Image 1 (cartoon, rainbow, N blue to C red):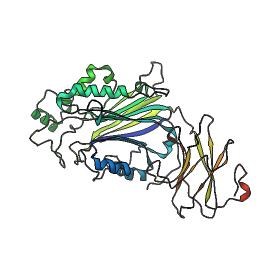
Image 2: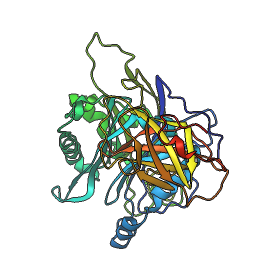
Image 3: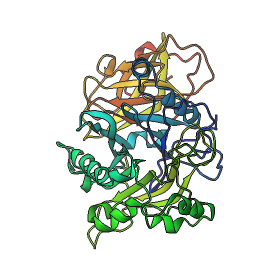
Image 4: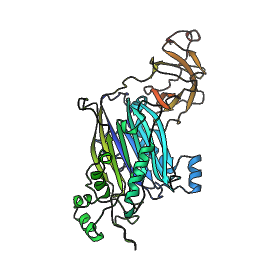
Length: 443
């Protein structure tokens, strides 16, 4: 595990890595370091957003995934948790999966608003096609993330565009400050969109790919053409397609389809984004997304699709710069297997009887990966005067040199709203009995 530095909230920028991959029911059996950019030592990523399509969703698989973590989620957590990246949200609809990971220091500034599923298959009743969404607030800005799987085949272009519109219209957020997704500061939209290359025949397309004449093919791409004709679709940006079409390949090879059907190659797998239109006098540096990389990964051959990734730099002026809860690890003491925790809250924070504080090992995989927890309302020593005090039992934790974290989970906000610096639980620390009434316990 990489050394864990002190948490410093990065005021002004964050790096985001987006992955989309139609895995065609394949299991995660290969090294994904290149896909996740883990071999790039110059790249320090803050947030991972991963969307998969066509995961295995047979009855046995769905029952197993309901009882345990699905294999792909578990695989990504295994790879990212040693880098201090935590799975903060996920949503699944049959073969569609959307995961969001973030580094520890960003957790108190990310609030999960909602997760949604929009089926469009079988007249809107079947989720083999459609979209899934995670809406969140990032440092006070609204961000909507959509992973979609649109209808296939060259002749279904109008249906693809209709499904795109239907998913967009279904994403409303009543009860929040910004109920219309088009008013959100950022939309990240990706997936197997199934757009095809029109007019050109198979041999010409293959020749252009061989000679890397991608621009000629891109001009005949159905999404490229549709954006010219539709103002709203044109607001969704995309980086240049400087990589080969990502579909359809023979499995376990880099050869395009050699079956009897010989499907024409196409850029079916895409990553789009849309920034909210700002008034002319608005500060242009308030919220700015810049794409640094947009590539396919040809080395992965377990599917008939190649995965596509986009890496972004996000520049922002934080609307939220102070966490709602501040954990105070300098006031940690133990007595008879109890640890006393001090924390402060901002005046606008609304607590709930169902709020809880979790004790985690550094390297935790997801929000529920705690080693111990306490309901804030049950074990309070003092409340109302900052700092608040609550104790947590650590009797089940053996002596260890490992580092730990404390996280405050808000039931109202469905998110972690406070996190401590990493610390070790010292052996031999005891709290004097007469210090329970003091504001700041003394050793």
